[in-house]
Image (tube, rainbow, N blue to C red; front, side, top):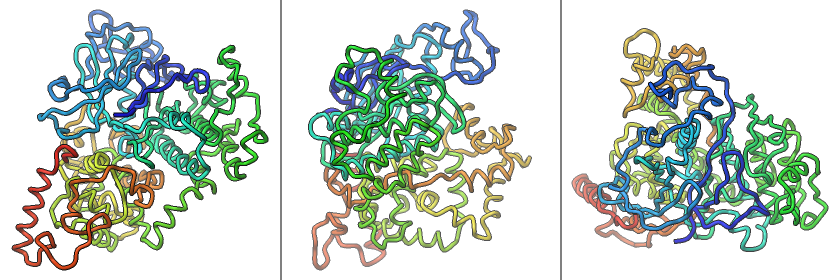
Length: 626
């Protein structure tokens, strides 16, 4: 098995290590292995109101503990309880060490029969020693890292966190295994990427940066080491990892802590007043590395100097596009690189603006040609599934309930598409069927990714995707809002949430109406997402705005068109397309057979039962759906 956290080389000379929350040996499987964290001071109350007998706060995650105070409160590891499940070793067998750092290790794991992931072969665990968490703030930073990874986890170009476990001495993060190594390893092994290849990869990197920024998250450590290839095949998808330095940051906020990897740090970070565009500068450094093989401010004698010398170069030296190999690089590539590495953050492009740059758009030509005259709603299918997966459960349930009652031409169009994909005509699609349906529509998604998509859009946790789930994710809600009956449906769904009929949706209402169980803090966050007045409750005007305006853009997600990814994943052995002789990967067949689609309802009934049975026992060594 190759690197999926990765056996990374020392990169002190060329790349530098991440600073601010501790240094660590880099790893390319899932996430950083040794970073303790450092974060920005935020405005909080000056004291907490509740303490235990020994002077420690009773809730170390309480918002009213100021950061500077939390950094000083020492904590015994035996006191740390995240509330995670505690039966990791009962559900997983550790099979191989993948990487080891100062405070954490990474292992490949095999699920046992009692695990819900039994049969999955692509799992890793990051094991963090609780003894490395010295203060209350260390504990809160780790919790924040996990929360952020879950928040952006609806994207299939983010390394996925599946479950969190803990024991007396350790925290276990069950994560997606990416066996293709990291981007820096690929660059180090040979010549820099061609412009076409670099443009495609930069599109991927800018998209995930924009996904973070759209959720008011700043990554603060964008560099080639933190982008992993999903597998060893040529053209494997690129995935962002390591949110150990990530923080919440609204567009108008200013952070002051110097945080990141020195060669990738933006000028304003050194000046200690920065926001989301600091990530865009880092993207510019990555582009420079892709095209030249080195960072713009690296010098051969850097080992003799402190990072302060590098920082001075970043602050004062211009980017020199006259030296080799830049004369041989296109003007469009130089233009984008210069605009990403603009020292004035106010004039620097945003990630979204960079994605519209001609050089990035040229790199997407193969995708546009593949789309041809297809309906844009069809080509955005996987993008919309991912976007829906990033919504809170409150938003998902609200859209699901509205979609369930819709009878517009838009929904009829989506139903026709669903019927085409749902060739077995089942009530709900499992992972195998979803993958097959996407393949029929010209998309290629990995098995694990398909499973993640399914779980993310399965609103009520039924173990499969129903038409209502699918419609809520796929319909163009901006078009739906133009329908005459839309506001009536909003009122109807609002009244369903407003259980006590007091004209507001409260935390108690959400606890009663949402599927699954949520902590009071989680529900409070969902309320805050729609509460424009800060009252702790949602009126109808808030609700409509929440549904109608805060939809986000699907364009920031990967389309996963087969034109790019057809050969990027191992061939599936559990496809029903082959059984039915459908789709591009199925063998051609003339005439009918026992595997042809049934002609009569009775045969259809039996056939569907057979498909469901086959789906349940599909090759467990390759994959077993939820």
